[in-house]
Picture 1 (cartoon, helix red, strand yellow):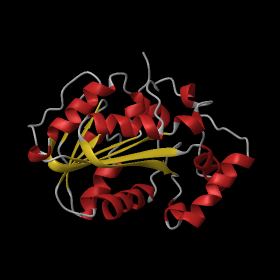
Picture 2 (spheres, rainbow, N blue to C red):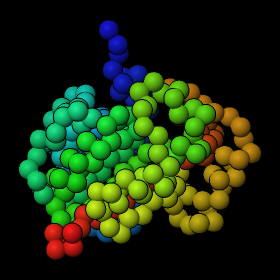
Picture 3 (cartoon, helix red, strand yellow):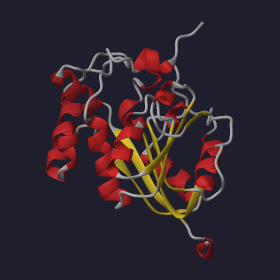
Length: 233
């Protein structure tokens, strides 16, 4: 019987709890959503780290995931295979939808976006974070569960197809210091070009140097959009 994805890739030994979820949640809330209140759905919420941090920021949080690890949290949570099943929420229910490090695991991204768009209110905002294929293509399929690679262009195209506006796509490094300025963002760009080391998905990243190299090499994408109001369709 296969072991669960979370137990294999997100055990406490490989991925100990850190303050990274709080930093990324705050960055998204303040720089993209520009809000800290409203109903927020964390799609494929994993262990529930981000459910806790978005709750602490002031959002009313809900979570869904293929595995039930996050049910131990105090927040509304349901087990859902978002690649095949519909989200168990009414239309136009959420103000915000976040999907981090998950859409690349889905084979039917159109089904996923149908549902994400459906449960968002008109004017609601979406944030999708995934691997940047152009920077990780050599190691993307080292993760046996990876199915759908994205570039900044394909992620933007997907959001536009589903009538999101004010769409922003671009790269982001999971190194909080690099979010402070364009100048500091040059540091991981330089590292990824001069240090040809690729780590396996299950590498222990408690070592600061490994973390710096790994997350400089593995560039991520963010895709942001706002659901059009009905009169705009």
